Image (cartoon, rainbow, N blue to C red):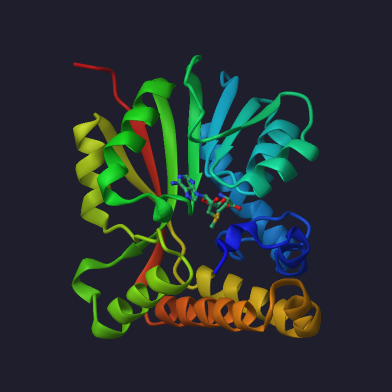
Length: 268
Ligand SMILES: C[S@@+](CC[C@H](N)C(=O)[O-])C[C@H]1O[C@@H](n2cnc3c(N)ncnc32)[C@H](O)[C@@H]1O
């Protein structure tokens, strides 16, 4: 099956909505409860954590369709670079880019100018543990001293790994998301320590993942026929199964979503 990030963009527009954000939204603490507002709220929480009044430039690793990069430039007035591995997503980002934004293939990205902040929103799950050193080394090199890195990721709670979860992980890796590897909390702390970052848990999103996925599934169901025309029956069935199952695992608290805020400490 084709990498699902390369499925037609029209398919993603159906359920991700206007912001084209493909990560857990935050429906809490706001008057507006629609998905778009909840996505913007999530992006603002992240950008508030990594941008301050002196910030000039940020980097988004695994930028997807570029929503956080666009928000950073349009609301926070910084310049922003988005990097990703998906050609289709990068093309969309480039077509929809404004001044002060640039986009680049992650594998071609060469750090040349330090940034004030970095975010990585649910892309860390695609980085294999054998490449964590590469990821943290890039972040450490690219960040200015005292710069902040925000990682929003699903976490396997170590004491809660059960057969159902392991079976699902294996199914995903075999059928749809070949590179999926959900980290454990200790792995984040170990890497942070190794690269001299302090770590704080900014937010635990708990039910927010279930709520986001439920909204995506509702939109997919409402446009089922169109979705099947765009991606095919088997792909639709696999994709909705993955979303439902992920939602269920989050509802059971076997998985959770964390926002880790890491600060690059001055080298000793
Ligand atoms: C769940 S999406 C999140 C996209 C975006 N951050 C957002 O919030 O809308 C995960 C993204 O990670 C990208 N990705 C896949 N492998 C990656 C890797 N090794 N390093 C960084 N990003 C990767 C995918 O192409 C995809 O755009």
